[in-house]
Amino acid sequence: MSAPSISPDPPAVEIERPTPPKDNPTLLFLSFAAVYIVWGSTYFAIRIGVESFPPFLLAGLRHFVVGLVFFPLFLHITKERPSLLQWRTTAITGVLLLLCGNGTVSWAEKYVPSGIAALLVATVSIWMVLTDWLRPGGTRPVFRVLLGCLLGCLGVLLLVDPGHLVGSEQIYPLGAVALTLAAMAWGVGSVYSKHNPLPRSPMLGVAMQMLAGGGGLLLVAFLAGEFRNLHWAQISPRSWFALLYLGLMGSGVGFSAYVYILKHSTSARVSTYAFVNPAVALLLGWLLGAEPLTLRTLLASAIILTSVLLIITAPHRTPTQIEDSVPAPGEA
Image (tube, rainbow, N blue to C red; front, side, top):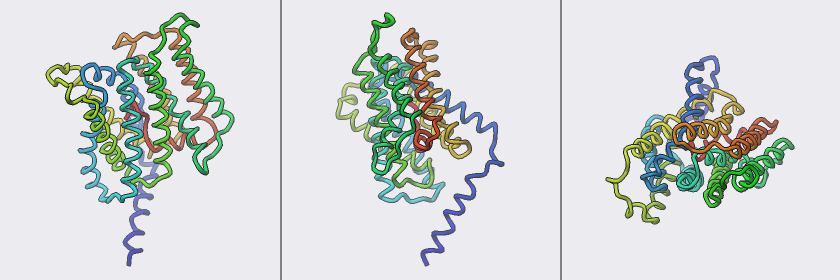
């Protein structure tokens, strides 16, 4: 009696998703534009937000509120009832991606320019490759991937501590370390989510991750005294606007666009956001935030983005397919 009630659902879902002839080229273009530009702009928006908001509170509010809206909405639309195993996966990935990843990015941007933060977070592709290689049953990366990892490390080293080479100031070391750890947490969380049960609806899974990760961020904000030391009347209008932008555009529109292009485009094309976002963030930080664009930054940018490009275009499933599960920390 149970077989007939289960078998009709999977075919209905699988048949409707891969329908390239019905793709809307305009909507696909707009979705790519949203992922490229909106997610690239979130780094600058975070920078503006932490001017008045404590960092973990800012990240917690943007994710948890959107999760509160998305969860009942997509629960109703999909009619799914998440299992305990699915809740465990989304809780772990939500903590790794949003708390350890995006929350750390928000904290670090109090000390590191938004464009530099985006560059360091772009190394998430490196951590995804290494994590999938080292996990039980993982796959060894090809030479091009290893070369990309080496170039990425050199780029990060150049960005953080070679001021004497080109005569520019060093990046705040603790902030750079925090951003690197955030990228690592995002990579580990992405690989974990790839190999553990999630809801069939990507948007329902995203909502569950936002509830778990956003709740964790608010808890950390409370324990760190961010609520106690916050004076709501002193929050500037531009920081309120940044929070609104991060919630509606970064978490809402950005996630929705990402889910759409995952269904209607190739993995290699989707993963190009990893090297487009830092370029957008650097440009916006320079144009709108008067952030310095030094020779060292440009050299490190070229090296880091080349390493990411080598990794995601290599003839190997790991750097592209793993990224299908979840976007990058500053873009969440």
